[in-house]
Picture 1: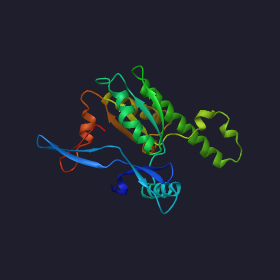
Picture 2: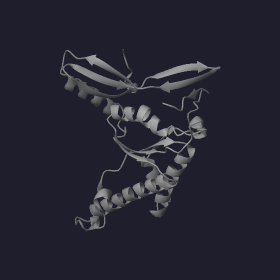
Picture 3: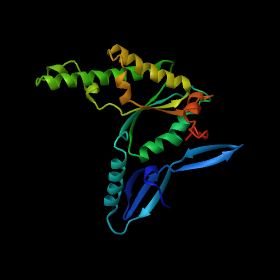
Length: 227
């Protein structure tokens, strides 16, 4: 089987002389006169003969890095088990986590237990990132380390490259509101910090109106909102 490079998300050496290539190729189906596009994780085991499996896997990953230099390396995942029909946890484990793992993306997961928790978590997460960035900028102007005295170890940790929301429209609203509030508190009136933190929505609510609207393509066909 052959994959387009744009569909490949990862590769790893397996055993002696084999590489597992992970891809999410698109398939289009028609139902009741409406076309929809869906991507599903596929892992193909390939035999390697002219180089070691480790070298082959590394070569594929290098090609992926060159093709997509902005690919995330770590994400913060919000899973809301109370939204919609309660399918968010199973969707996370069955459809989302395997894709992130195959792509080598490190995920930090919050399973919410109360209303407002996602908002507070994202607000605090971005606030700490902004604090870390402010301290870093101050250190660049001053060779002393005094600017880091009030920054804890957690704040110094590498922030996520984005947020994945597994839930309904309300959960997405909470996440965006939390990021917005963090920017306002930090004095970021132009919301520049939000450009560094893309939000991906895996719809697991009841209506999923937001995902349906965003997934509508220019040609009028609908991309499937579910993995």
